[in-house]
Image (cartoon, rainbow, N blue to C red; front, side):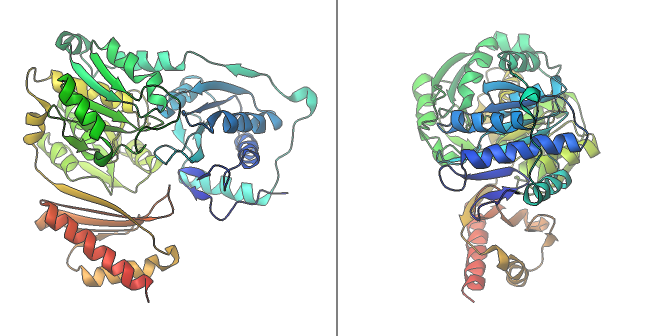
Length: 464
């Protein structure tokens, strides 16, 4: 029989997410993994499937279920254990694997977990293939391997070290210059998988590290999403230790958030802008980001005479546009940095190395001063419960209430008022059962007003 997906399972281009013990069970994970192994073979992708997980307490249980599902259809499995998602993706690419499975719910709370699906080459399952895979899951049971055709599980304990070496060998980094700075860095891994890579990488780059949350035990000491409001402890650590910068990552280490030398949380949107400044100063070209990312990325690109291009939200959407544009750097305003020189994956360790290079490029100049030179924007990000079946009505109402802007409807509704240098983006989340409101303007009051007016429109539509 085909798999019956629970109604409260989040299914999107980002994978399958649910609460452990609710929508997400070992039986479901095993079934999805078996379907994925069969799907890869049916589409002509032979070879091993690489499996890794973040530090969540449900991870060992669900990773074993995923491995069992893959073995049940005769797939060879290479098991990495607890690793960052970008480490997994790099292992898929370097090993010429048929694909990969990441057992991680990224920034979701601890009671969530998920499956992320990688394809040969080390990118996520593209939207068209994801639709085919979802159809396959719903339509038929995979064929199972006979007892004598079940492979042994291989284990790869060197993926993190190879990831670190790949970063240290990037041509865009002047590692001697970074090492000579001997920077003091404050680090918050949030008890996620960052603990297995970030301290070692920073140490290899000559940093003195003051750290919290490096034990990868899944008992998150803060909100796992590294938004500014979650980084009070890191800000205090920066002030107490005298660090030049504070770095925070999410549980699967594909997002990087910053705290400046004064202990002020900068949020996630500046991460890509500062990383792009380093890249574009050495290798001019296109920057690709998503529709919810701050205008500051456009400003940085323009300062180097380079174009900034927008894609729908979702890592694979940005990656596909980056490949099409031959972009030199890209990412998302959630702290995700993608550097094609290493791979087409959001990679917080890569982002951290680029931020150290950013500081080393102007020795002795504090991060707060460097950031102060950039155009100042205020961005508001909110989540609203709203019936998705009414979104079309909501978008029509928003256009009436907030006229005069340039509309973009490839991913929800984005309205930009270019002369006022402000914009609003309303879209259904692909990772949580909410609608996201993102508004940006030159001042906090204007940004909040845009978000408030949008929320009021949604409430009016929902209320009939």
